[in-house]
Image (cartoon, rainbow, N blue to C red; front, side, top):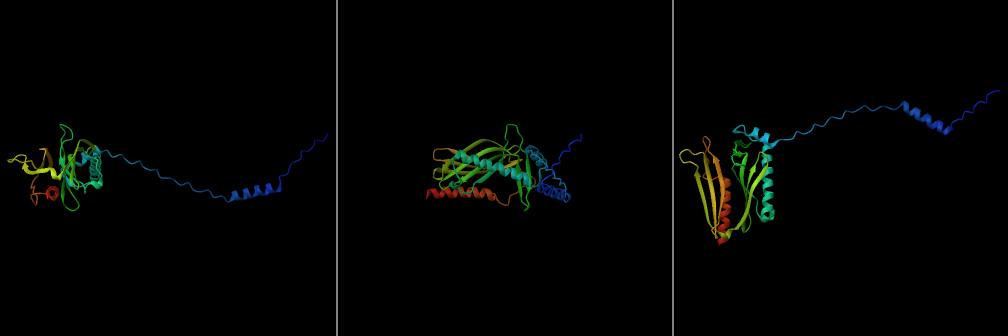
Length: 240
């Protein structure tokens, strides 16, 4: 017996045409070249203690912007803490005035010094640890803040915040002296403010390390003249 031939089902014309189009298109496909994506290098974590140690290896040299930025960030943090402790806002005072003097952050710690040469040719004494005062001159009151800052780590401790009315000041005393008159190593300028209730509020305005050919063009620095000038003017105005 003859075997029955299986009928081959023909594909519909539309399906054939569509298949042909796909095949025709495949002939003209252009493979896009692979683009190598460059690997993003991970930013190296800046270790403050190492940066500071390297920076203070030399006693003098050009200023370093990256270190200056770290110090400014520490000052900004101190001002924030002063705002919280004194419960004040920016509108309560004119621009804050900072005073920094070298002071060990921990007992037995050694303060390192560096004489920075700025781009304009001036010099600034830098410390890796400092006692920082911030003065906020308000309309009728002086808000003050002090704290120890360790620039090696950014830590802040020993915060003190206070305020007094200019009208309550009965005595202002400034003292300019050497640590040792025969062989001086430091020259200091201290300010004491006496209030009506016999409270004495001290501020250390200067603690300069004596170096070779140390000299100032005037008895007071411009910064010191600014602080004393504003304070005394405010106190005298409160009495009138």
